[in-house]
Image (cartoon, rainbow, N blue to C red; front, side):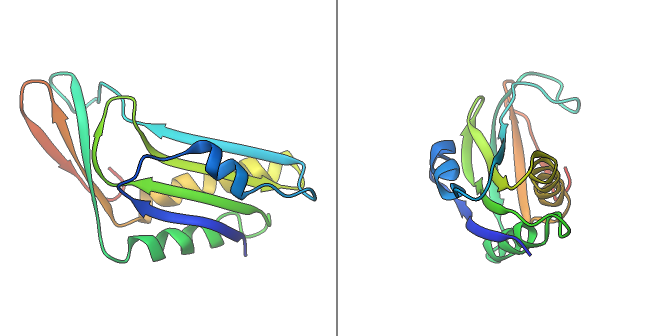
Amino acid sequence: MNDVRIAAVSEARLDLDAHLAAVEDPRLGAVTTFVGRVRDNDPDAETPVVGLEYSAHPDAEAALRRIAQEAGAEAPAVVAVSHRIGRLDVGDAAVVIAVASEHRAEAFEVCRAVIEAIKADLPVWKRQLEVDGTSSWKGIGG
């Protein structure tokens, strides 16, 4: 089970440096990060994307902590992860993950496991906003 130092679902802007500081540990020599940003396009969009609106189930933060604890169960690591909710513009960070472990392979493995589990299991939904005023909802895994 991983040591989870941050597991947050919040409307506040996400701070990569705060996540890096949270996983700082002199025993651990590898640190990986992932930043998921809002992009200006989507294969399902007919016009450019101008933003996303995220909403979350009240239990989303507890689910995020469980995801971070269980990710890469065979590769112990220190994890800091946050998912933003509310209105995000193109370029804004929606997800930030920092993982520290003794070796790089484990750090990459845990980081990837966290983001894949977030995409598949975190009860967060997004409404994609397009430049022409249309919008579409995407659920877990979308």
